Length: 228
Image (cartoon, rainbow, N blue to C red; front, top):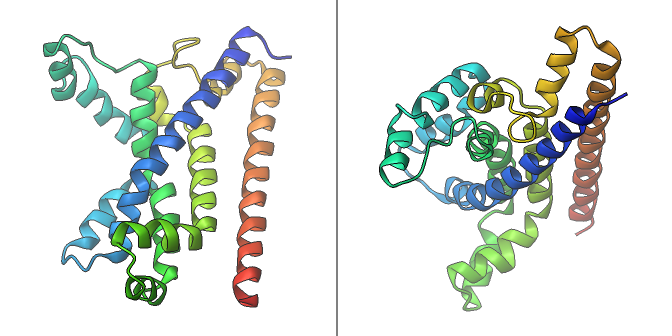
């Protein structure tokens, strides 16, 4: 059965996923909108930077985040000079790492969804006197509901399953930075396969249900669009 540290890891993981996903939606939405609408010459460069975590080994990203956010890093030194402290090995550091690592899982579904809206509905709204902000919130956002749901679910699920990045930037401090993926690793190292099975099985079931939800929602919206 699970022990106190396991339940603590579950709470930290859920908290991390909720906070990170919320920030990702807030940051990722304007980025995805800009990428879907812009004709900027170097747009591909920004898309490549955002997609980099998809192929970059998590430990590499975690290492450079640790160097950057640590006491001797540029951001760490800046925070200390302002009277704060380094955010490496803190929950805040975990959030920063999770947001960067899960960014493509939120931005890309949103970008694809915004692109699928097309320019015609926006142009029609413009002829009716809608401003750019009005067009975005009254036309683009409602027509991209499935994209928002997919982005939120994928961002949440990906954050829950992180290992390399959170281990590098957060360590494994119980109740602070210890997450489920690291707890599974600790149980396997200690040959406590029973507890590892409980945690791993929970993550497996959660991931499957989230993906199933995404596919059902996307299928529903596809059917609704075809009827229209």
